[in-house]
Length: 260
Ligand SMILES: NS(=O)(=O)c1ccc(C(=O)NCc2ccccc2F)cc1
Ligand SMILES: [Zn+2]
Image (cartoon, rainbow, N blue to C red; front, side, top):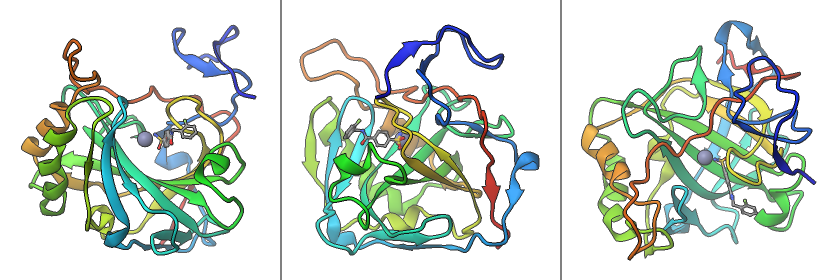
């Protein structure tokens, strides 16, 4: 089992205070160096299809806000690309900074984005539940999409309008008829690599698919993310910001890239 611990012998590029999973060889996030990625002609386009009627609720879990989906049917799935099986959408969430110069978990040639979207899917062909998949090889597929500041994102506004209802940790609000496809870039080029969850238990069960092109959203929409709280009602107010993990060593991994 994976125990988080402060590492004793640190690889050169490892921050000293960073907890590194003991024996972890495929931790996330990473800095993607495009010149070192391998163009793989066998990487086909992702096949993504989401059913907005599967959207159930928004939950502030104290790390981020999760938009949760009904994964009892087979309507919201991703397959193709590096994936051997079809994976069901369980939830999506974001990571962002207190200021615009930080926020994303992955970086591209050390370039940081102000926010990053994670669409979390689990391998429903090999496992019976999400909780089983999270601890298993090839259990999860997470699609990462970078967000950059620019024009307001019209599709995102419906979600932004619901955030005040989940301001506090452990609050939830009903949220339906939202299609996450509106947050997938039109260019389906991506990088892919084997990694982990970026929050505890940081299990090494994730096939990461990072879209090459960012989507745009507005300052006011990012401000709405920053108005959420890490803390429950009645406790000291702590704005939910800087909920991203530091980049982890690539170790013995290759990042593959599409040529679409
Ligand atoms: N940021 S990310 O890498 O996309 C990420 C995705 C999902 C989780 C998650 O479901 N944790 C809760 C959880 C559920 C079940 C069992 C253990 C867990 F930690 C954590 C991080
Ligand atoms: Zn995440």
